[in-house]
Each structure stands twice: as C-alpha cells, then as structure tokens.
Amino acid sequence: MTVTAVVPAHNEEGRVGAAVAALRGAGLEQVLVVDDGSTDGTGPEARRAGAVVVRLPRRQGKAAALAAGVSRAHGDVVLLVDADLGPSAGAAAALAAAVAAGHCDLAVGRLPRKARGGGWGLAVRLAQGALRRAGGPLLETPLSGQRACRRELLLSLPTWGVGYGVEMAINLHALRSGARIREIDIDAGHRVTGRDLPGVLHRGRQFVDIALTLALWSLVR
Image (cartoon, rainbow, N blue to C red):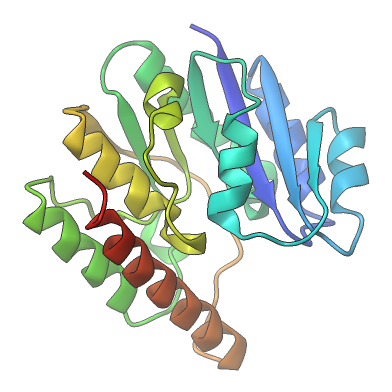
C-alpha cells in the first residue's frame, strides 16, 4: 500500500523543512504540505525540502487545511503529521506501517509524556468523555495530530469539524464506521505550549474548537 503524508503548516518556517526531510527519509511516497495562509517562508522551505505544497491564500484552520491536503493525496494510507515535529517527524511512519499492514484502520500516535504539553488536560478530558459516550476506547492521547488512516475513511468524513477539533471528527467517524482504532507509541517531540498567556490562549481555542466540533457532529447522521 502507498502512503501520503499530509502536513498542515502555519508559519512553521525553520521547522517544516526538517519535518519534510525526515518523512522523505522514512521512505514515504508523497509528502504534501498545506501552507495554511502563512506569512513567512513556510511554503518555499517545504518545497525546497521536497514536498508538494498546497497554498491556502488565507488562514482557514487545521480542519480546512487537512481537508484540502487529503483531497489531493494519492496514497492508500494517509499519514497526518504536525509540522512542528521537525526532524522527529520520521517516527510517525510507524503509524502508516501499522495501517498498511492491516493491524488497524486508524493509528493514533502517542508521544512521550514530556512532549504532550503543559496544560491542565481540560481538552483531553472533554475528548475522552465524548469518546466514552460514543462507546469508543479510552485513548490516552485522543487529540494527537500524529495519526494514520485509510484514505477512503477520511474521504467519507461527513464533516471535518472546526479547526483544532478535526482529530475528534476523525475519531468519531472511525467509531461510527466500525473502524479498528489503535494507539501506538512514537518517539517524537514537538513545540510544547506552556502555561503562559500564548499557551493558555492556544488551549482555550483548542477547547472551543473541540466543543464546536462535538456540537456539529451531534447534527450529523
């Protein structure tokens, strides 16, 4: 089975090139970077590193960026990777390998605990509660942006959700579709947000996006 990596990126100059190089070094057939309205050199850096770049003229958020990338993916398996993983991005290839080998339909990457951020866990508990009510497994990292999935499952998503809620939309669609979900440890690290003002604002936005996605999902039949 072939694999396409889709990397959403907004103002990730200085990191996205290393992420692309690591993914290409892991032997992926296609690396596609969605430049989500960046105002820096994200797109050119990704292109120099060997990625196919899709440029969104204005920032539309993670859900829209991933939808744009997956619609252009050629692989049987799509690997979703955050740009800020930098040179550790290649570790995510293990997720695609698990799906390609038939071990699961959705592989969710569980990063080392020290690489998961320094928040209070409110968004994670919100996500875990929604999964529990939907009859799904208790994922330790349900909001991980590192995940691999069969492309046809992603293409059949009824809604990609809102912004940072996209991972929950994928989780819930996988459950509803009867897909096999597996959480897999990967040795990768990314930029960790702390408890300073920018970190609090980021996690607040994430919480709101997840709540809006869950509300939207409740309307989908």
